[in-house]
Image (tube, rainbow over all chains, first blue to last red; front, side, top):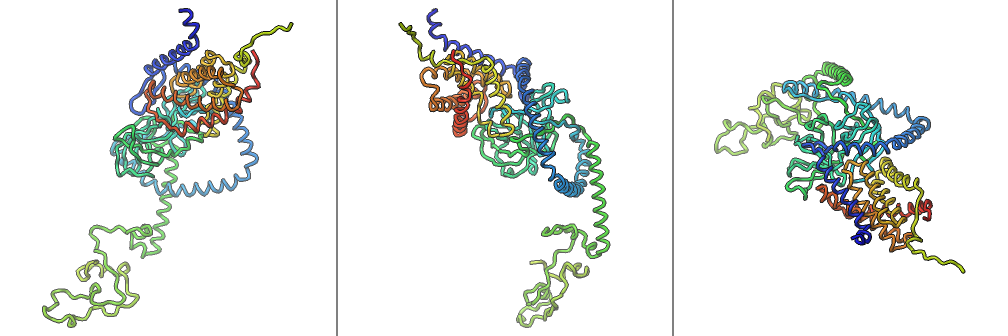
Amino acid sequence: MDSFFSRFKNPLVLIMIVMTQVIALAIQVQGTTTGYGTAAPADSPTVALLRRWTLGVFTPVELLLHGSGTRVRGFWTNYIDLRHAREHDQQLQQEVSRLRLEQAAFVEDAAQGRRLQQLLAFKEKYIATTVAAQVIGTSGTELSRVVDIDKGSADGLKPEQAVITPDGVVGKLRDVNPHTAQVLLISDRSFGAGVILESTRIRGILRGTDTGQVQIDNLTADSRIQPGERVVTSGGDLVFPRGIPVGTIESIAPDPLHQPYTAIVIRPAASLARLEEVLVITGTQSSLPASAQQDVSVAQATAEEQKRAADLVAERLPSLHDTGTAADAKPGATPATAPDAAPPRPRMPLHPDRYSPGDTPPAIDLTPGVPTTALPTPRSQTPSHNAPSPESAPPESTSKPDSTPPNI
Amino acid sequence: MAELSYTSRRELDQYGFHPAVTILAPLGCILLQAVLPRAFPQFAILDLPFIATIFFAVARRNPIAGAVTGTLIGLVQDGLTSQQFGVFGISKAIIGYLAASVGFAVDADNILNRAMLLFSFSLLQSLLLFIISRWLLGDIVRVHAGHQLLAALANTVVGVPLFFLLDRFKTRD
């Protein structure tokens, strides 16, 4: 027996090491709190402590490396690249002006939306407070898509808080230490979030895959779902506020591992591979934040100003004022007509003949058996080239649809 | 009369390391692996802790030491991820053990042998990780042969020069 152990000492030690870890793995899987729906699995307290110790060893060095890197980049940005600041500032000013105009256009729709939501007693969640954080490290492996940030519980962060960039969703907090935190990216296979397709309003669950792709895998084939459609958060997971951009649909294909569902691959709006700074949403509220309300009031004032300017122009140009919707119509768009408006009338022909609209006498005036040459002379034989078009025709002509045949 | 002593090839090729190197070299590899992909996302395909595991296992030529070194490196690597402790621990323990065992049979200082070791063990590690994820954890993972070959190639290209760099810290036991 003794010789057996001495002879197979090496493989026995290996088996013991592997078996110990397999048992530990099984205990961890059993002890993992698997949330329902989109909640990420959480570690048991012992495992969380081990992970915190590991991160405690590496994150100070990561912070140090990140700090020195930031200082070098700051030196470059502040002293050498400063000459581009003025023109950049001008570009930004122009963009702000453009965005203000766009915002003014949207503000009325938004106000109407809010009124309707109040009518439906729908509780909207707006982002109230965020904490900006910098990415200092990664997991270093493609099997686990997590990044470390330089803010922690001391800054008010808690697990399961949403992490975004101005471009879109990044992920959610997983482990939070006093001064650092781990962000589970949307491309990680244990990630889940409620999303909605923007135009078709189809709801789905967003998940990461082992290859780092982001996809919706709980929807069956639907012809309405097309590549290029934008995907936003639905707010149903109680982590991400509603309406934050997630990405656009890149491809749709049958999922061989989850039949009969389809794998809808999403191209993330945020650049997950090159994350520098992120925003952690630490608080939401049911009304617009003060800064956003101020923006809305500015946008409303701009919208009012634009409306007054448009009215002023309309008063000075009565023809435009009379046509009403024609001034608002976009080029190429069909003007809207009221249900009770007169039917559209054809243009007057330049060279009328017996087939021209309006030149055929009513059937009551025709006599059976009379040759066609004996037809009465058309009423308008020689229309001038500057004949009034239907658009500019006097109102009394449009009010007689019976004297004009329908548009053929 | 000159005194002759018998020294086996195993003893001739067995190396040791300063304790500081034993601790700091793997930790440095893990740290670089965590930091580099932030600036260069393509570096995520590499596995520097794997290269360190192979190097120390082959240099020491002791399977138990290789398995223990692999386990420790793997467990620390697991601590930085979102997955359970043991995924990298198990795979690197087996890799360390096998690398030390193979180190007896081949000349581990030969550049071609080193490249072959790195390439084949990288593929083996991918297979072990697939088995652990699929059958022990029940995750839905797919085999991406092209990507794994590319990863093995990248580990070989980076690993061979790194081996020569780490050779400087070898000490004869």
